[in-house]
Length: 92
Image 1 (cartoon, rainbow, N blue to C red):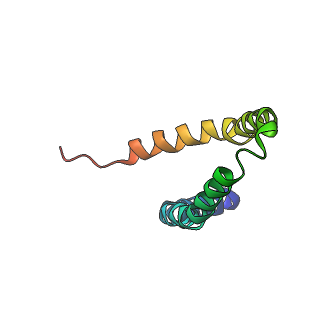
Image 2: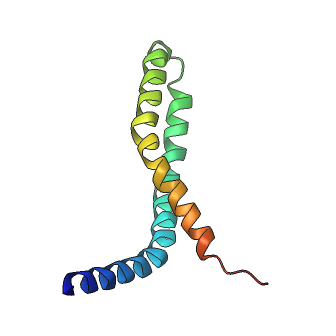
């Protein structure tokens, strides 16, 4: 019984921390990755013609990476959105 009480307390504290941490962490990741995204875009534009023979390999890698990274996260994204809508306060 004590375990369940501590588990409830830990989940409550974890939820409270994540509700405040996630937006800040997400913004920090965007701020850090934005210059890398722009620099990689510039590099891609400069090296487009010399590396054009690697395009099919890059397309396959991008699709595989998309499936490997994004597909497993989709249930969590939808669950996060659903739970956020449940907790949203209405003005009514």
